[in-house]
Amino acid sequence: MNNAEELKKIVKDKYSEIALQSKEQNEASCCGATGCCTVDYAIFADNYTELEGYNPDADLGLGCGVPTEFAQIKKGDVVLDLGSGAGNDCFVARAIVGETGKVIGVDMTEAMIAKARDNAEKLNFNNVEFRQGEIEDLPLAANRVDVVISNCVLNLVPDKQKAFAETFRVLKPGGHFSISDVVLVGNLPAGLVNDAEMYAGCVSGAIQKDAYLDIIRHAGFTNITVQKEKAIQLPDEILKDYLDEAGIKQFRESNTGIFSITVYGDKPAEAACCAPGAVKYRFCKGAKNGVEVTSAPALL
Image (cartoon, rainbow, N blue to C red; front, top):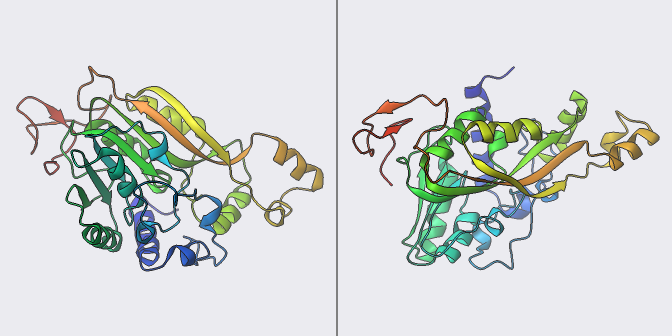
């Protein structure tokens, strides 16, 4: 089995390729982690084209929702996008926060950061910033952002507990997140999951929905709500390798399968910067004396 670093390298290499392709190429690309040439990201992606702030150069067709639609972003907010890619969700969020707000995108892939910065420069935005870094060790100080968004990225992060602990840390007390992601519901045959990854590209790393929500609770978030849920329709050509005709019909009618969800959570207004159980360090860069943070990130 691949360890965390090997998985990160696979994802980084995959999305470095994607950064150099158009949306149309990515929707039928050979960039799946398995190397399969039947990857179709379009079955996940939602339509952004009517949203204010949409920029086609930043839309690589890789999302599985529209988290900004549910994120309750306000004018003047500081918004953080985890796994910001070419900047699509950042530019939509920027249209909401306005000139008085700020949007920060974090991505671990150099090629994506370069593309996003180039897009921001073309748009002459001075309140959208892109930082290279990992979601499990965010390059931000604690208690700095009002809203965290992410679109079909955390399923690819090996340590989801650290990812949500970091999300908790950087949010201001009283802040919140709205994240779109891919999860599993029910027990699927291992082979079916593997074939779905070949077909859809974003299934790799997805975990059970209940386990996903439990990780969020353990991180300290409250008011956790699934704002949107959509079943991913796998073609019969894949299902028939594992199920007979009656089994396929039952599968279609059940709640078992692969789903894209958009989930919301609050950081309590009285919360400390660190999630329950997080490893803590005192007097880290960017922190005030006596405030505990989980790392030593750069200042916002």
